[in-house]
Structure formats: structure tokens, C-alpha cells
Image (tube, rainbow, N blue to C red; front, side, top):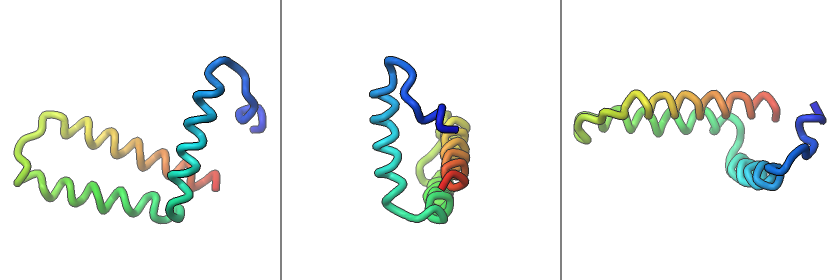
Length: 79
């Protein structure tokens, strides 16, 4: 696993910058919140759809949300 954390190529400064940003984001709250809060946000979003009107990108929004939750689940396992 340490091999995954060792710099290996020219994109490493970018990866390290992403890593710092993710670390800062994840330090804002606890792992339980990482999965519960997005559900609260998404639920509010879906309830507001009647008022907001038709959105042709709703499927894309759900896929982005799903991937975000999967990301937080993987991070929670690492923590």
C-alpha cells in the first residue's frame, strides 16, 4: 500500500495538491457526517424539484451524488 503513496511521475505535485484539499475537507467533520450530510442535501434537492422544474441533467446529478457517497465510504474505510 505504501507504493500507492510514493511519488512516481510528473503529475505528483497535482496529486499532492488534491490530497491536501481532500484532507482539509475531511478534517471539517467526522466520518459519519461524510455520508449522512450528503443524503440530507440530496433529499432537500429532490424535494425541491417540483418547485425548480424539469431538469434534463437529473440523472447526471444522481450519478455525481452516488459517486460522492462511494468516495466517502472508501475514505471512511481508510480512516
